[in-house]
Image (tube, rainbow, N blue to C red; front, side, top):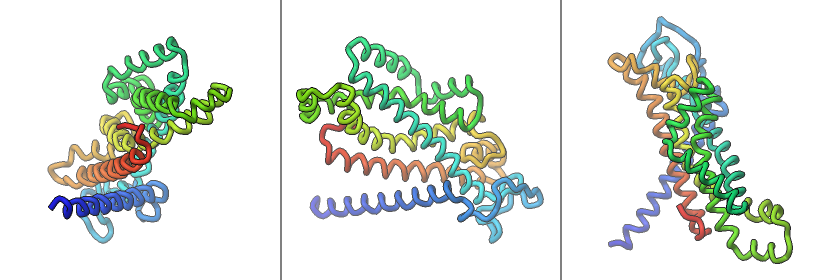
Length: 282
């Protein structure tokens, strides 16, 4: 019985991954070329058609200002992905830099970097992001920087751990024995071999960053009106739940489906990577 179930489970997982990739492909297309998928302007106001239901002219209906809801969701993909991807990329780059620096430093330097990281990790990530946005001011760029700041300490710790694992490998020891300079060893061997595992883990964190970015926009600290960002759309829909619940359902589903697809792909990449590199752990 277990023998029959195992192939079924693997097949189901494979289909889920392919579906997730297809969803991400559609989201990426929406972010890069929204005009191919949506013919209406996401900012065009038409009060005479406010709060209309789905129709041939408006596939998902209209919002409180008569703007096409489908077009706003499609155009909003670019902003939501920009925040999630941008914050993750900044966090990975800075985390890799300081993490490998801590792993290659003497004990005093390592202690200073890691104790500073411990201080920031003591704060919840979203709370730290809120603090940064409160200082910088509400905008999409500042929300991206705030989320990156909340993610950097975790990536520093991960990068340091991966760098320490790579340092113990035979090829790094051989390079040291041959007299290769420490800087060259780190740039040629340690960093390139520590980075792939960070990128795989970063894929999973993109989903978290998208949710956090939408949360900031929902609170009015991210994208500002009339921007068609998913979190901002959810915030605008709060006052119309009794008469047009689809205003909240559509962007909410967009966030949910995107995050699930990112997590499915990220988990699959983690399984594949860990199978090839036993030294990497979750």
